[in-house]
Length: 326
Image 1 (cartoon, helix red, strand yellow):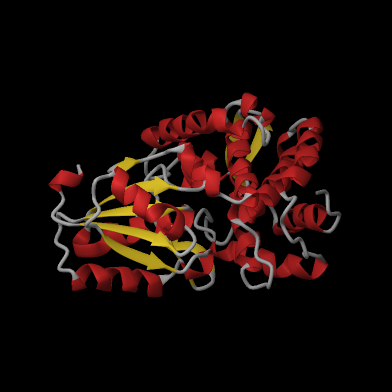
Image 2: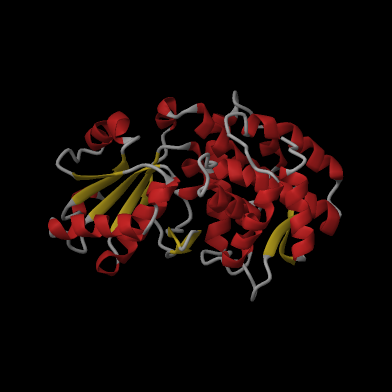
């Protein structure tokens, strides 16, 4: 694959580059690749950073046979995939995820995107990577907080597909990485453009994205998985109220929240509820102005496109962040 490329570029960030950039270039026999190193963090997943990537590609006269390797977490794979899929109407790219969350979710499935107007992933494409290179060796340099964040996405697969994944912990999570990827690939293969089944992958993300976007305006932003962890708690609360989910599922999950959020700085209170709810207006799954939720009848039995009144959504959020169930 690399041998067919006219040029190879490696996109990464300032956190990953010192650990893995030379090694990956050596492993892939592309030491002559042109490096593009950007600042780390979700706040840089924007159009300005994409323009920098495009300008670098143009500066080096990259043609449509060029290849971009996205080496990093979900921010890098989302951002790099979008830059590649739009440059000269699309060049090939490979994802080499270095975080647990990216390995089990963000790097797989062909969603690319950037944040815009203060909301997550508002601009993007559906474009599959040529390949996704997953190697647990990258996790050896990953902070434990990032591991906990990725485990939240793994638990999502447990709720929507396989209850065995609800048993993951810090000691056994690595043995389930491949299985999570297989679940996502199977779902995406059946519904690549999110017209139906693929929506189940948004379990916990409707409020999770809103919480994450709001917290990016604070001095103590949450990681994606931490926000999703809270979003899943709210979704389970709604599932009990709206879909008859056994409350034991909610209570069991509440026991896992302290593990998922152990290193998060949680300064959310009642004053944050309305600002968080305001972000729901930008959710891509809305029908008109009404938010659509993925809820559960039971573990492994998700329900799509559930309309929930804003008052009930507010109650779920208040019950989650004000009562501090974590």
